[in-house]
Length: 469
Ligand SMILES: Nc1nc2c(c(=O)[nH]1)N(C=O)[C@@H](CNc1ccc(C(=O)N[C@@H](CCC(=O)O)C(=O)O)cc1)CN2
Ligand SMILES: Nc1nc2c(ncn2[C@@H]2O[C@H](COP(=O)(O)OP(=O)(O)OP(=O)(O)O)[C@@H](O)[C@H]2O)c(=O)[nH]1
Ligand SMILES: [Mg+2]
Image (cartoon, rainbow, N blue to C red; front, side, top):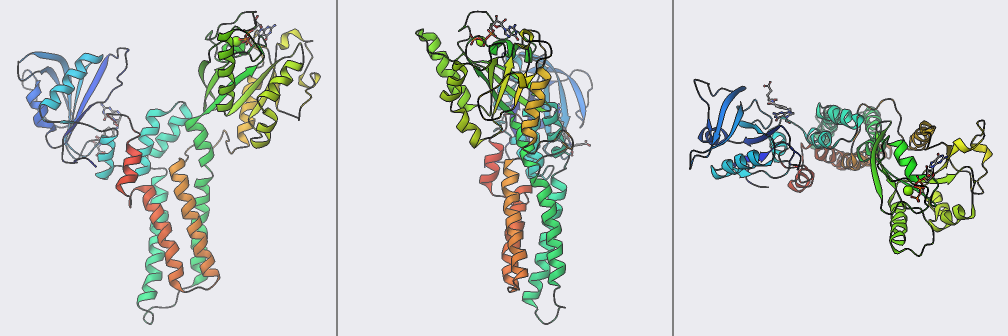
C-alpha cells in the first residue's frame, strides 16, 4: 500500500471529451491546506475556516499567472470524507482548467491519488466499513435507479450493521467457550442446546443475506440480450421499438444489419444491454459473412437470446436451421431460461390471433407475440423476461439491499463453518472442535466488514474504483 501520510490529489469529476460546466480537483492529507494556500488567492478578508467556500483565483506560484477563477471548499479533519484535511477546487469544467490545477497541486507537493484512494482512507480512518466502501463504487457504477438505491442502502450501513452484530455474537460465543477450555473447574458448564440455538439464529440471518445475492448480481451487472434470427424478420425494428429510438437501420432488404448495434435499457430495475445482430443466412457477400459471424458470437456471449420469427410466415426451415446452428436446444437444457421466441409482425395476423396459433415444432418455449412496426406488445416481451429472471430469485418487491459476489462467497464460508460447529455440538465433540469453526466464521465476517482484512483484499477492492473516488 502506498504511503498514507502523503497528501493526495485527483480530479474528482468525470474526465470525458464533453464539457462539464464545473470540474473538481481535490486534495486530502496533512499538506492539503498549505498547498491550497500556496495556489489560491482569495481577495478581501475571506477566512480559511472549515466548511466554508472561498471565492478567488488559482495562480501558478512560479509565474503568478492566473490559471482559473474558482471556488475553494475547505473541510478540516476529522469533518471530511477521508477524515483528513480536504480541500476542493471547484473549477470551470472541461479538460484544461482541472488538469492545470491538478498539475499545480503535484508541483506543490501532492501525489496523484491511486484509484479509490480517498475512499480507502475513509475506510482506514474508520468512517466507512468495507461493505460501505464497496457501495460507494457501486453507486457510482449504478446503471438503474434500483441499482443506485441498493448501493445507497449499503452505503448507509444496511449490510455493515447486522454483519458486525453477527461477528460480535460469534466472538462472544468464542469467549464463553474458550473460558471453559482455560478454567475448567471455576465456571458453570455450558448449555450446548442454548449455544446451538444461538448459532441457528445466526444461520437464519446469514441465509437471508445469501438469498439476496442473485438479484443483487442481476441488478448490478444486468443482462446481455441478443436479438437473433433470419434476415428481414424485424430484429432491428424490435431494437428500435423497444428502445424508442431509431438506433438501427431498418429497410425491407434482407441483410441490412451488418455490425452489432447496441442499446441500453432498464426493465424492472435490471439494466439490459440489447444487441441487434445481422440476420443469419448463407451468403456470398464478404461483409455480410463477417456480420453473421458476429451474430453467432453475440448469441454465444448473451445471457438471453431473443429468437425472432416472422409470425405471418410461421416457423420456417430457415428458422429451424438457425435454431440448430446456434445449438439452442442444448443451450436450453443447460440454462432453461436463456432463450425466448419473439413472434414479430403480429399486425399482419388476424386481430384475434394469439401465440398458440403459431405452432413451434420445438420443445415448449416461452413465446411472445408482438409487432415492432406498430410498437405493440413490447410489454409482453418485458413481462416474459421478468418472469424468466423471477425464477432466479428476483422479485420486484423487497429490493432494498443486496450483497455482492465477494460478500456472498464469504457468507457461504460463514454458513459452512457454523454448520460445522452445529455438527460438532451435535456429535458431542470436545470444545476445541467447536472453536476452530467459530474462529473461521468470525474471520470470514471480519474480512467482509474489513475489521479483519489483509492488504491484498483491500488492494483487490479499491483497485476497481475510479480515480478521484
Ligand atoms: N463536493 C463534493 N460533493 C460530494 C462529495 C465530496 O466529497 N465532495 N462526496 C464524496 O463522496 C459525496 C458526499 N459524501 C460526503 C460524505 C461525508 C462527508 C464529510 O465531510 N463527512 C464528515 C463531516 C460531516 C459533518 O460535517 O457533519 C464526517 O462524516 O465526519 C462529505 C461528503 C457526494 N458529493
Ligand atoms: N408488418 C410489419 N413489418 C415489420 C415489422 N417489423 C419489421 N417489419 C418490416 O420488416 C422489414 C425488415 O425489418 P428489419 O427490422 O430491418 O429486419 P431485420 O430482422 O433487422 O433484418 P436484417 O437486418 O436484414 O437481418 C422492414 O421493412 C420492416 O419495416 C412488424 O412488426 N410488422
Ligand atoms: Mg437488422
